Amino acid sequence: MRLRKSPAKSIPIETSREIVALTKELGISLDLESVRKVISLGMESLNQEAELECALKKLEEEKGRIASNFRKIAFQYSQLEAKCVGTRNWFGRVSRDNRVLAMHLCARVPRGKREEQLRDDLIQKYIMNWRSAQNQQDNKGDTNEIGLE
Amino acid sequence: MNAADERSSTHKIKISRDLYEEIGSQEKIIRSIKVGLLSLRATSLERENADLIKRTGDLEKYIAELPHEIARFQQLLEKALKDRKTLEKLLDKKR
Image 1 (cartoon, chains in turn purple, green):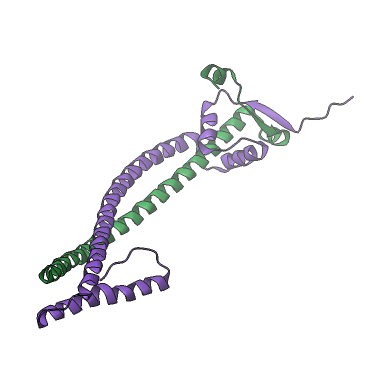
Image 2 (image 1 turned 30 degrees about the horizontal axis):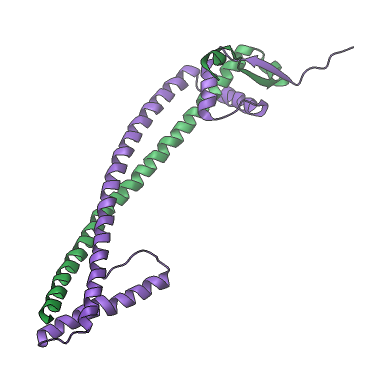
């Protein structure tokens, strides 16, 4: 009786820890199809193992530098963003307080031309303009807080 | 899996018999796999670096815009604080 050839052959790779480490790092499983692709990539590669190892070392060093720069920039950005959000929120709170004060002012009768002018300007700014700005925001569907500009 | 188990376990890869016979030796297969994996890792690292460079560039763009935004809100805030003083003054006068 003639034995049929097994379709696959097993190769122990415990001697090459690097292969095991690389597959883990790349998150790939070495099934039949993947092995075929990796071997074909290895055979097509114009670079030698030593050259690739050297290039990888350089790329890892470069990644370290780039990542460190990214962290610095990201920290700078988060500081500035916090400042921007803080200022915007403070402005929003003061504007809302002013709106309430302007509403109280509506019920008062001004004394003199100058007071009347100031009163009208503030009511215009914190009640009339606010309403139209709010309507514009509603039409845009924007839910961000808005203030008077 | 502990360290002892890790050491005692045998890592094996399966390769089609045709390909094995085509390449000829186990050594050559392992070398090709290693070179293939190293190429893949190099490509992946190049992509990661390019992605980080792009993200750094994007952040730098935002950083350049933020001081203008901050200055704009500070200006608006100053005006609003001034208005608050005026409003308080107008309301106090009437009490």
